[in-house]
Image (cartoon, rainbow, N blue to C red; front, side, top):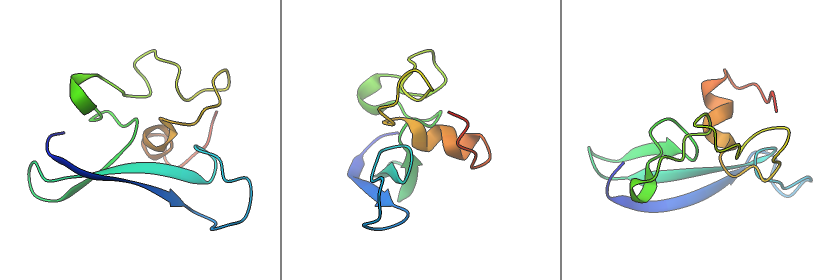
Length: 85
């Protein structure tokens, strides 16, 4: 991931609750490294600023133990759209 142009949040059910990251709010990057591309926060390609932010790298940023939801977009997409956390 290079040349990050923007970050955005997507709330899949609008103003309805719970309005929580990893439950109904998901985070994405838009980059311009190989043309305009969309990357999920926490996906296996998430190396923002040279740090590996992949949800499955042992950082525990999207799990039943850590409910901050920050890296859950990548996990949900890579697990076949299942919220198994």
